[in-house]
Image 1 (cartoon, rainbow, N blue to C red):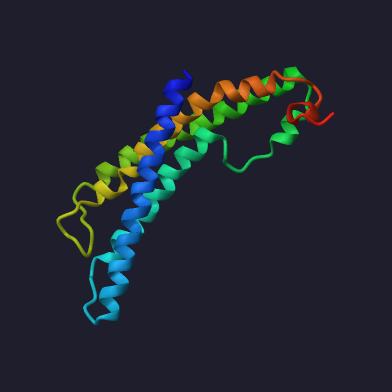
Image 2: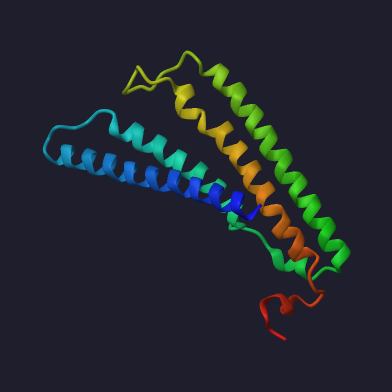
Length: 167
């Protein structure tokens, strides 16, 4: 399981880094052309799409690392049986939301099937918005791979300070 998690993490890191580099190149090209008086009509729209993609794929990476905003201290202060139950309840809601997001994202792709980008009419909007169901599926996988770690933490000692090594 650790090998699968490490490979999935590497996969997400590569996607995020490639998107960051590509977005940097697009923005630098756009600014350079604009300074030269030769504005690229497409760079704003493409940079916006790339930022959205980077955000969604980055969210999947953050989910895998357990780096989303949360208050784990509240759960750690609970009795062990409550902590385990809260982890299950919390993950249920995360999975439910991501499943709904993925399904809704697929429905939206059907609605946008005939729309194209304004500045690049050969690129369908459904292609750019496909990040929503894809990232939701990746977040589900990331949460599933992170779940054993969350459960192990919840089953740990009743002393909140003992997990960090502080007496």
